[in-house]
Image 1 (tube, rainbow, N blue to C red):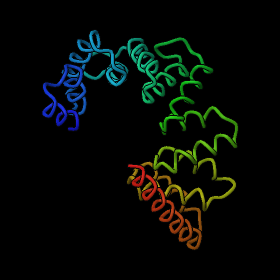
Image 2: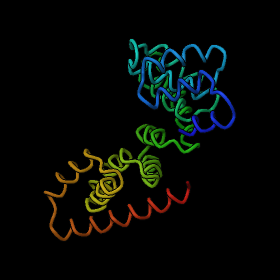
Image 3: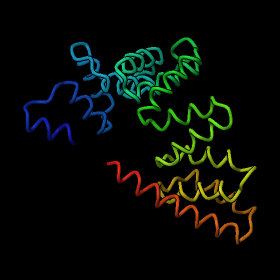
Image 4: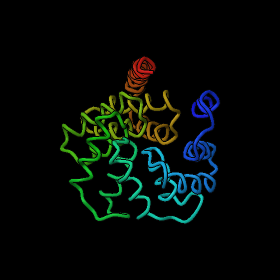
Length: 217
């Protein structure tokens, strides 16, 4: 929508912008064709990232992991956080590109430094416990439900109430179904007093996160 408004204000939108608009509308085939054509003349990082997603997931055409990884790499070279994370995932898995955990970690660090929450989760899963907790906490405090689930798993043995609190926070913020199911299973093993305490903490965490993230916008 923002790109459309800018186009009306400053003239016709480029083919690349039209491709990104089509991506937002989930018109995968149209987006894929427009981005493929546009990037030859207008190499922009957001274009490489979104085309990479289309190739990686097989949206609008055949799956092409190698082409996706190449797009992510090119977007990452521009410093696009989403492309850096996606390229890191490809490097870590060895899908579409030669496996390279150290370079994957470098990509995740760069993306996490720019605030990419999935990059923080990826770094956590590659880190020692204390660093893992720090990355998961940072992503959780940015309201990322998958990070909250990982943080809950991390805390389960040492503090089950705190673990359940983060699941409740995830449900409050995002209505995440996986977090809701996990919370139900964990709560079944806890006392009413523990559940009540976890719900209280979860509401507090959710409120703090909402205030913080809204304040950043």
